[in-house]
Amino acid sequence: MAGMTQTLAEAPPLPMTEAAYLPGVAYDEMFTAEGDVRPHYDPLHARMSTLGAEELAGRQRTLERSFLLQGITFTVYGAENTTERIIPTDLFPRIIPAAEWARIEAGLTQRLRALNLFLDDIYGDQQILMDGVVPRELVLGAPSYRREMQHLYVPHKAYANVCGSDLIRCQDGQFAVLEDNLRVPSGVSYMLANRDAAKRTFPGTYRAAGVRPVERYPDLLLATLKSMTADWRSNPQVVVLTPGVYNSAYYEHAYLARLMGVPLVEGRDLVVHENMVYMRTTT
Image: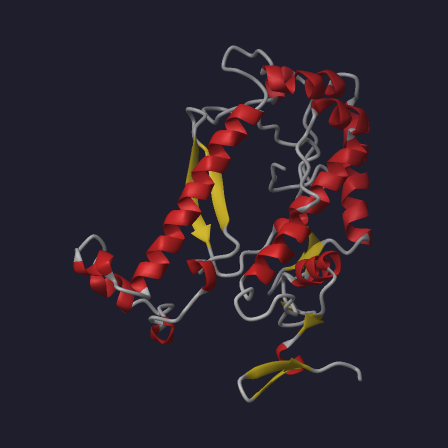
């Protein structure tokens, strides 16, 4: 789903005319440079054309209220007015055609494989450093580099099990990666919530579009985490570790734990005894 900096309820009203729509040099997801609707946006554009400005604004407010009532919020540290806010969400989904998505998926898969190979090398033989491809001091001098991890066995050589790659659309329509977040990236719960919102906001259009499902994400995440201990235990205990209710991503921690059917724990709930991690429970 495309994000926006202000909700319709907060933004100053604009006249619903073509003159008010000025994307500038940015790539327009719905319209071509000549002003024609892109083919994959035809059904959504047709549905939008039947709704007035007040109806669209009302649907936006309903969407935001449903997020607030469900607790789909994030914490803003240092905010003057409130610390709990909803994720700014665009009423209209971003539509990516299947052929374009296949290219993105293949590229991100290749990228994550390369990142894991890089991590495996710098914590292993460090061939990339010896060959001078990457400056040695840039890696070994990084605050996040962990020497304790050198030559440590990692199942499947999967150092990064979840990756959050930030994608942007360039002016020519091509996608580019801004950065890769490998250290427990957050945000997938909001994507799942946004998909549910899209189903409710434009149900008929959604059903007719043949959108690929995302509901299996929690099951796939659980299977991935379990596979990381397959060498030691066939059915391992998986937990979601959270700093607590005051963490900005606590909603996501609780959401994923519930969908995966695993305990949500804090550091104080865990104890190590004879190289085994135990979880404290109410019993």
